[in-house]
Length: 101
Image (tube, rainbow, N blue to C red; front, side, top):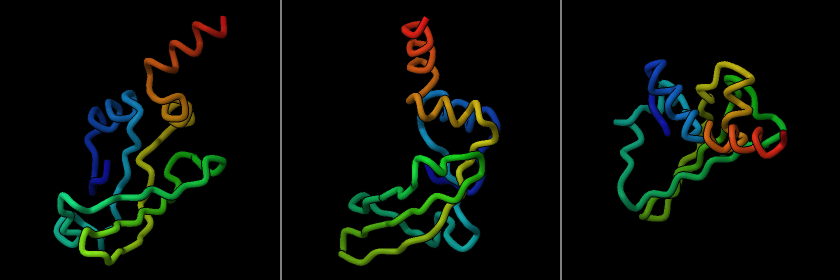
């Protein structure tokens, strides 16, 4: 999910569902991006570098054929949130822990 800011509870809920919240840089706000239904967002990130507040590459391929690329910031604050996202969300994290025990 791309946004300028996230309320704490909204950000936490996204992470719990396994959705990576990304903070947009100032110059790429919603009005500047002008996303349309045919646009495709590609997230580029090295899994080994996934950490709180890490940069995440975003490529927007427009339906018209052009594209823009920029770096967003992962709206992740703790290592526990990183592990939750890597597991696919809180439910899968709990299931993984149960299966391991």
